[in-house]
Length: 556
Image 1: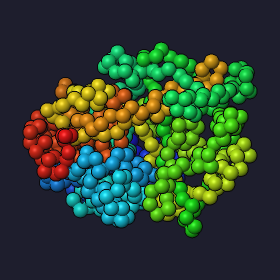
Image 2: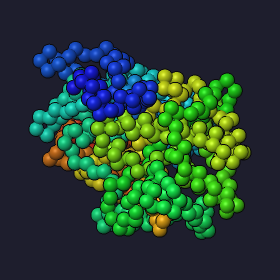
Image 3: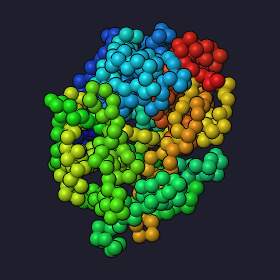
Image 4: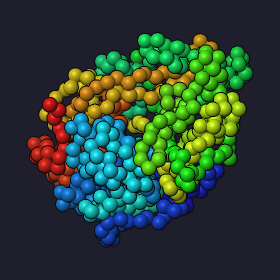
């Protein structure tokens, strides 16, 4: 599909305003994507017969996992093309998520993950810190330098449009920009798993039932009112969900689903809430003040206003740092994530994003962006926010030296989960908790099973939430088979990000250092795959190669 045809279709669906309001928002296909910068070696000539740029390995998605995969494959002397849908690489690590999700001192990580961490430690004089911090702009530059150092060809502005197959193998990938890429092996390192889906591999979206894999934490959870206490001393807050308090006929407040309590433990289509990880500062000379978005609507924050009032009535006012948090990183910058209550998280939209068209995704991304921009305008301007909170928040603003071509707003929406592969092995809660030992282990994961908000709805006439607290797990092995589609479906595809796990297990796997571990393994496997067939990789040889590259595959 030509880009101008796509844009005309977008206009026909009334999304022109969304495109106009999101200056170069992440993954938005715009006319700028007709310009496709290439970093690294000059592109190979396209095959005249097929008009397909030929290479050994095609990696889709310039996420940290995709970057690690491309680098590892290139180090094994393969010609690699890394395709990034937008004009920016680095995924979440270059879009506000500026601290490690697990300590590198634990000995879980090695290889390319630690190469990146060590560069950050050296750049910022961090020493042997428990966590590693860095700036988004530095991360993007550093990832680009690492790709150039290993001769990876990076082509930006290549949003996937279609896939051609020959039997059970992917023959080519074509992008909205009108270019086609042919390789022996393909790696889907995107957060959304779009290459995987278009290839014909089996996928799943949502939560499995408790019975499916016999997981205690699976399925729909029991709804609760927002809990501002702790598990030993809960203090629940009841908030009216209706536009006119007490009047269901007036309709629900924005962001509240009418779905109500579903059968506990049942499968459903819910996904974790999405947000953007903001980069804010109060360093003089580097502040872009929070401002009112063009579509600002105070009603979008009515639930939050009622929450604030309810806490005040209980003698528990929100803290001055409620909106900006305390996520200090480096150079006076803060990584602002969601909190447990009403914050930057946008609930009940993630499934629509995961299964939606690009037109629909553009609209969702713009909606989430405008919601968060409006949230901070609410925080500094609405009289229902306590004076001390407004004054404290107003000290901060967006970092003027970050995301300079995007209004100082992050490029990448935090897609905590989307489609997942249904592959040759489904990693489950039981594997993580019982520390299953795999003969084909190609790396370790290490993060709590940390589920963000799933459903915000109505419970007994008040706002109720389906959310489960984090469940701690130690380091666990991840098998190679979890990256592989079923043998009878696709034979030359690896999926290191949207890999084959249950929903519960994915709430732990879903962190960037683990993605990079899996990406490096995918890159090595693609390089070793005979005739591109990932099912025929010699596991002993793969593990040996990964060990040489510093990958940690066993926990002692």
